Length: 415
Ligand code: GLU
Image (cartoon, rainbow, N blue to C red):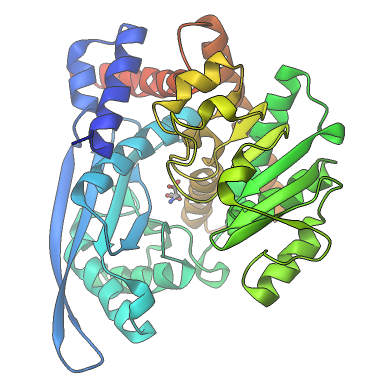
């Protein structure tokens, strides 16, 4: 059997720690979540029967601040995946230098087969089960796979009823009317754009004459396409789970978005030819944006990738086997924990605004986000350059993160 996702995450910490000369005790601390909770949630279903759902919440490390991380609703959710993702959240928050540790939660369920009422009762039941485990100064959930602002609103409401006072900062990614932040919805794509612009600068690529292909035309992917287009980049291809479209002359991503909204797929967009998800990855473009699934660029196809920059908006689209091949071929990978960190960064802004009770404009949000993403990119790229030949961009990102968390652990006197 291959390694589990959590084992891969542990190995990444080991490698980054050893390269940095981090003490073995600190590496050991970082290889294990501090706290893990498994809960059973009884939910009255619409048919009158009660069904028991299993949920998890894992707090990986809190040396830098309260733990932070999303909540996934998925039929194949596992405790191992939640531990892995909690570990990666510690690294993600540390890469961008926001004052949080990492956590993640999940419920094994299939929300596509549940009514809104059932989802609401399950979400409230989950909060009933974990209320004293979370808090604005302890652990702060947010949306992730198959969860959304509405679910966050139910959860905040339930939490506030239990603790007996308002506490909007306990959960981020809320609807605007109950303390959400302007710009949170598109923050992941925005953060991806800021890092891509910096990557283009370091390799001497002019965005105005660049081409891009986007895998996944959902929220993050479609918005990223529109942002790149506004920068002058020619979008030549885009795919979704049903298939894709290609036009070497360029595709208008706004028109494509409208088409997708109407037809529920990008397939058949006028003036473009069909392309598969696999073929899109191997197109001769400058910028490749995987914004859909994990494990898309593997040991098998990595050597055929022609892009100069890969911006990982999805979590884990490039496998550990593919990384060294891409590095060898001079493809600049912006790893997920850096490229998609705009989401959690604007979650941080939301939490700050909740504490202040004072709300920013979208312009203020993006101005602050841009600064953070640029800094994080350059810090990572400098680490990569300093160790040129010996490491991948992913290792550089992990090293920047582990270095920060290790310092916090040290000054707090845990070892
Ligand atoms: N779920 C997102 C992530 O994995 C956002 C987490 C957050 O906002 O706390 O980065």
